[in-house]
Image: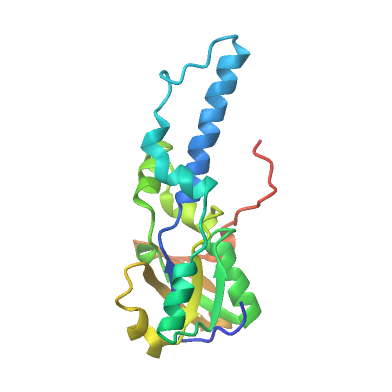
Length: 199
């Protein structure tokens, strides 16, 4: 987590928000089942949504996989990130870990954050914002890393690595530039708490 420097690129692997979206669907399913049981009714899966429509997001929640392939790619192409962490607490929270340990700030572009398309559909269903799933949700287990700008060409052609921003001096803080060009202090965005009650 330590080693990021101003000017470094901020990169993520894969797509984000899927695990949080999958959890939303599973919690809704649980609530429907409990409601049926409270009223002494049979839990009829035909009455509720078909979970197959949410397979990818649910799999991201229940069966996350480590990105060993990316580590192998780094080794093959002599890529050495200046810092790295897996995204378990949400993008905002895990970025904060890197910034704190490295003594730097960061500027992220919302439009560059890769969101799982199914997470966008689920967010629409719940009348929520899928970007929040990526920023504050947890358990995506994609890799978040920083890289010297001169190594950009080494990752540019990789289809599963996205550059989402840059490391800045510490005094500039942690900033998210939204799709309207507004700057948001990322310290106001919460992260996922693995032990939080679901009340």
